[in-house]
Length: 233
Image (tube, rainbow, N blue to C red; front, side, top):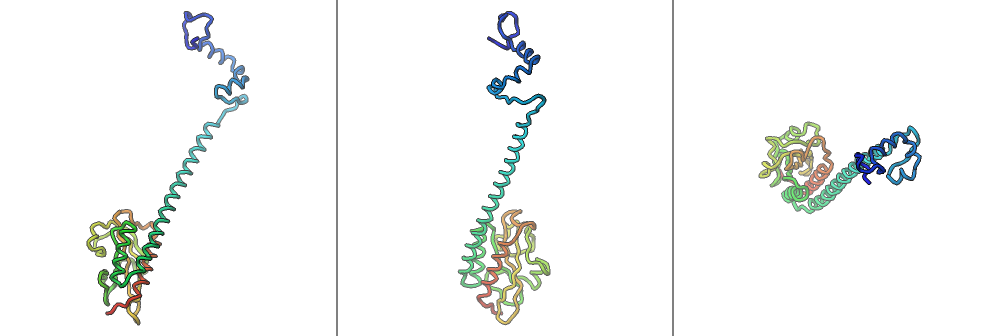
């Protein structure tokens, strides 16, 4: 029996879909009252003049759940990245604490920046006058204030010309983090202005909107370690 047949030659006694459809349109309550039939064909019976918003509501709930799941995944990724960075910072601190002198301290800082954080490098810069340890960068008097501002503690942003801190890696540096230090390197004399500098291979590696807590923590470790050995003028 073909319900979709429309020709009279298909059999006078046969049921055809146009006739069935027309009959259902003329007698809708008959179908609505047959709850078992509605359930068998996957429909949910409702009272008269009731509109079923179940599907639309479910779609909205699914969309909300997907957004929440996406936000949760993003937060988890950030948390894992932060935890990994903190772990690497702690390990780098242990590396720095094993330094034997100022030159070794600078070398270890640069190695930690590259090997543990994927940076182009790191450097320690110290203002004149006074002796500057081998491997450290030299800044002219007032150089730290010129880079950070008179009261600035840190600066994060794009690399710029004239910042000669990264030696052979300077061409690879795209962004930098500069942290102020003031180690007391000579007994009986005031602390000397200094910088702990980190260079990133990426343009967005360091930006003004970022926090610099981990970089500042490493700078404080470098500062305290540098005070272990006197620098003779």
